[in-house]
Amino acid sequence: MKFKVLIVEDSKVSREHIAATVEAVDGVEAVTTASGFEALKLLPRQRFDLIITDINMPDINGLELINFVKKNPNYRDVPLIIVTTEGREQDRSRGMALGAAGYLVKPFQPEDLEALLRRFLKPL
Image 1: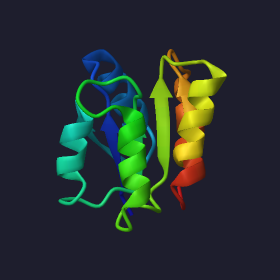
Image 2: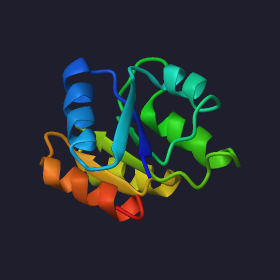
Image 3: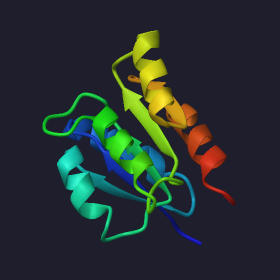
Image 4: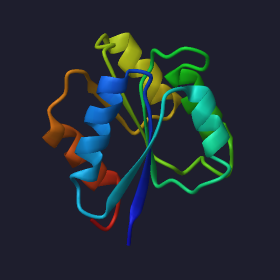
């Protein structure tokens, strides 16, 4: 079984780093977008098993994206992980309160992201 992970990240370098980390996990495919707006266009077209999003992005930010996903019955159960430079506790609390399942601060260790993927993508 192949899992599909949507990565929403405006920084090309971060997007590529996250995608490489995700695809290093056996049986996981990464689909990347550079904005929350692009992600909202992709969601109805494909089924994703997990979403990774940054907070700070142009157009629709990560918190707005989480809010949309969690209010939509089609995506409500898809786990979301925030990967961001925002390391303050209030940012973490806001993200988790909106429904994020995990929170990583950049720069992150690839094994930390892999551990979250293994936790939320069953069976791996």
